[in-house]
Length: 180
Image (cartoon, rainbow, N blue to C red; front, side):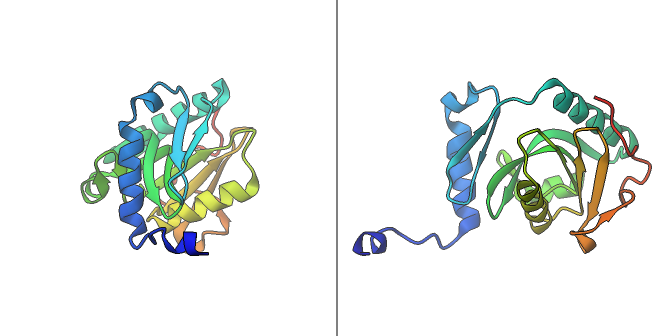
């Protein structure tokens, strides 16, 4: 137990994750990796392979739809967002200019975009997706969407995070299905 007492306690997890992400982002070796890099609550690096064609195609189509239907903000892919469980890469996001000004710290958003979209991969588990949904809402997202393996979109709103709704509140004309 004495060895544990010698390890300092993290008092400010937000500052810890921002500092750790700056280290990860500055590492030239990690920039050579073709897939996604995230961190977890302990600052450990998580590496995922690049997505397959259907995943990438759905990301692109969702981003296009958001850019077309919500012209007042920015549509992004692989957006780094600070959460209580480290820095996560949101597959697709839509964020207003005001939120960018308030939340962008270096290379990471400290406030989640208004819309965070996860395109489900074959390796994803229900628990993982529910955890990401909760983390994005906790970080300030207004909506979290899932695009399933058949391209169907599933919408969740901050006020009823556990209950799927029929349509987005911010982008109600978003198609319910995305082609790969």
